[in-house]
Length: 502
Image (cartoon, rainbow, N blue to C red; front, side, top):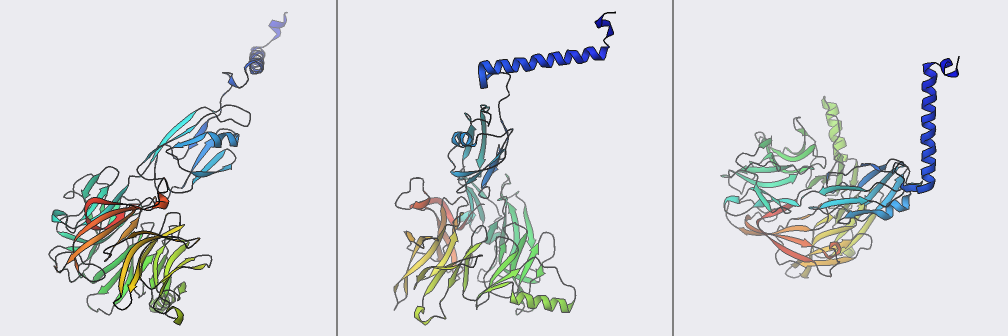
């Protein structure tokens, strides 16, 4: 018998596979020696995942991750990765994963393209060219209208697309509002239009969608909190959009004056915390309250007690707070990450600084840094997105006998305490300003008042607001070419209390 006849079918199959694989390996070795990295048989390295591909990003999106299918030559990747328009940042690596962290939030209203080619793997293999696109949110804000059919109504304006939309009906007058973190809804307080505006006893809390393409007649306004048993005053919305704190007064007993917590679909809970101005910290778990003799910090993530003894203990704990800052009389704002705050010390315990005010930077590491001292007023200060600067509305005292003040906007470098004067203001009565989420602009208003009673009232003097001008201020430190002077643009809109969408 021949050898062919001695082989079984399975043996012949195995020999065929071995011969085939041997030929393939020999061919690959031979061709690599002839043509190196450009051989068609070699599979080029590639990007397996880019986390921002096809997505719309916002200010809180500060880093993306690229995952490669094999270890890469890192310098070649960093040298050849490009983003257009540019987004300066820094690289960090973990195996096959590259993280790119932006130095500042991506400017809103832009379309971006990421490209990578001419990079190599650790085995000197040329990467497959990669192109991906992503975008940032449109620049948008809301304000309260002040003329004709817009009077007292909440208005949403897309600055990128130049689209204006009235969000609330004509039978409601809006007094205050805040965006939810996704920018798709707004929480607002409003009262019926036929009320006397010398009294704010009829305020209710509502929410409305900004993304609804319908007109205001068909937009869905949802009642969040009524006013049957309690009068609703100021409110604050947590950064995660899940908690609302409200200052409420009992209609049966006006001495029953307290802060309440509203969460999701639950009934409002009384917090047993009394005080003045309040705000929820960016962690959405802490409430900061002005207590007269200082700033108290109180927890919001407590369990509701059932009996009187536990309830009294809870009240005692609430009065003490989880922390207390007796040195300061006013909290202006928290940094976006919640690790620092801007506060005002009225210097009542220092005879040498009598009749002055000091602006302080305080962080969670125990740093208390005085940035600025003035005989004028520190009206408001807000952090930029990277927490390196404060933008402040201040006044300079120009006459102590008549107590005349000159208002102005200023930029304060937190590290150096250097003050950059941005803009002098003619009239600063009840000015509200808002820092853009990407840090590239400041919105503020200038209101016009009268003695009428059919309009929202100013916070300071209780006068009726009958008009307003909206302005966009671009500080020189955040302009592309570092201009020496701030840019000021009057917007073609009439209203007041502008707030940027997140």
